Length: 299
Length: 299
Image 1 (cartoon, rainbow over the protein chains, first blue to last red):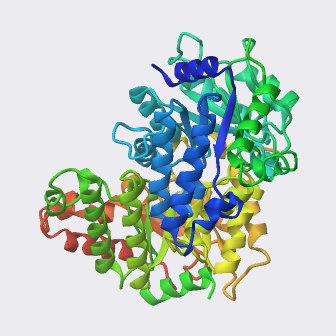
Image 2 (image 1 turned 180 degrees about the vertical axis):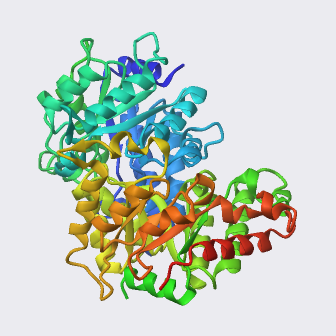
Image 3 (image 1 turned 90 degrees about the horizontal axis):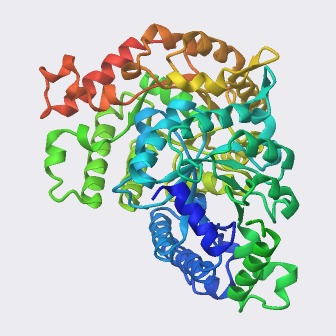
């Protein structure tokens, strides 16, 4: 079954469009996990990351469709972190969660194929369902990923309009009235056009930040066949009203990511008193349920 | 000593502007290395990649300033490949070669910092001298890398104009007469302006492909303080005449990468008969010396 169809089914099954971002950071882990790291060795931190992310997966698996591990934080621990990343991806998949690996990879030709094989291929040691991809190198850097998606029923999410304040420097530049990000959107629509599932979506998704609602609405219209991954909700400032324009008329076609606001919910003012550090699992569950309620868009 | 100064010294010491790209691919390895892989396990391939790359390093260490391992091929092997990558980086540094890790990483804010720490930071498990970075996310995605460069005397090479045919799709789009890649160049010049070494170069380098000589000449002029990493020479079609415009008036300020043409020289028609597979080390040495002669630009 295609990635787009699997994602749609997962959204319907859980009645949730929340994507839980798995961004483990040493200093923000719950105290019990930090205390278990006795000698500050990468292997110890990797074990803590694995435990932290897998326990989050256990807490949210029945109420969200997908998780998004951020590769950078695992890479920071070196090979031990990469082993942890593989364990987290496998645990999520065992628990019926779709995995969006956030690696923002890209390169030219056969090197792009190597990245696609690495994260999505038949022999992928990480075995993710999908991967985020950067578009700066153009169409021939994205096509190798799409070919692997075709072969493996996997998906990609290409950066279109990012949520950071500086994203506009290149993305918002206009040529004959068309911005760079709109040109990327046009390309994604083209790439999907011969690959649509019965629901009308293809394997080539897009990343469009929650922090620019007008642009998000425009991109929803410009890419009717792309699932949109919407980061920037919560900690980065995007509100529920801002992201609702990212969905299609059935309330489908997008998932909204929140990382810190969910995984480190035990540190948020509203949960710190109620649950505190010791009950961090309950804080994760409560924050996820709260986000599901805020984003109750499914028709 | 700053990365720019170290690179300049390495170029002067070796009288070479050749960067040897370390792109190990299973199918292209010399026969003896492939035969040692008995069971097609990632750990065996990783050992073959380590041996292959480290032996190349031994062959070229006295005649080139730097090597460029391509992360994608190591990532393809999973955690075992990432261990190999670390071993290759360490071996290059022990042999006095500067390392340009080709990862084309990027992300926003604190995640960009995680990537920078991962590959260039004080506790980096990979410990590279420099890293390639993609600019699509804008200035605030590049600054975290530059800050780590400042702290660690490391360098980055930001994609400006890439060597692939499709690179122009976004990079060549013009706004008020300025292309996207020229806008990136302007940003890099700005970022370097407060960070110049006595030679006039800063830590923020650029990637500009050999396949577009006119653009390379323009980018040399636009970024007088950026070391330029020039890919696309040899296998991708760039010729010696094409890349000479990438250097400053002293014949400094750029290094030219060749991967397949050097590391798989034993398969090239001109070397296959003379050396063949068994003498692949000699083919690597001969191809590197040939490239050094072709690029004899140093004044």
